[in-house]
Amino acid sequence: MKYFKSILVFILMLAVVSCKKDSEQAELDLGYDYYPDEIGHYIIYQVDSTTYDDFFRPVLVTKRSLQVKEKIVEQFLDNTGRTAKRVERYERDSVEDHWTLTRTYYFVKSNVSVEKVEENLRFVSFVFPPGRDKTWKGNRYIEAVDNNKYLADWEYKITESGVAANINGVSYPSTTAILLRDRETQIEKTYAREVYAAGVGMVYKEWWHLEAQSNFDKPWLERAERGFVVKMQAISHGVE
Image (tube, rainbow, N blue to C red; front, top):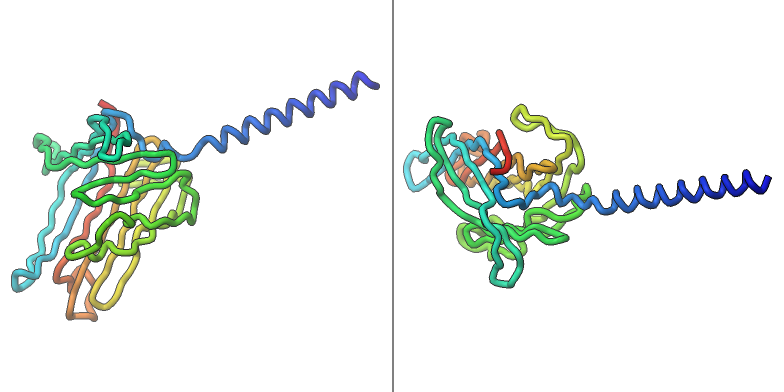
């Protein structure tokens, strides 16, 4: 009888140890894979945009469709001594065209967040772990004045995390969606949403910032006088 009791105790101990290890492994998965930082990692996007310019009468509406490639090219120390990664952005009008370098930016990935610095604007783009309903002030480092006034007081919110999604015909088993802003008045509309896929990075981005002073009965895309609408959808990714 004592022999069987010893075996039972041993089995229970193994089960407890196994559960503890599984729990520790689950805790260690903090979602860092949603924002890859390997040198050579790239994503190619299909980008469609519409801009409105009220300098002209009638308002000048410009639509453009192109491909954008963003590639992590090097590691360096930023002005605070933190490890940063520089990203090169290329554009082309179609697959038959050559890539043209148009811009660079960088990001700093820590244990708790990702800070992205583009055109001298510092965004807290992502946080770890990416739990649903988590919120943070993503634009807190931005001086929201003049043309950037609309960026003031944004509260980012994770609306989905760890869910499968289909973006532009591509299936991703685990994604995190962030609603950056959703605010609308009679004279202004601002909407921003991004989706990140594990092992890939940002696979979807949609930003609206439109202003209008008249035609309140019409849809925004018809009555906008200034601003932009941009949609980015990933079409391929890899490491080179």
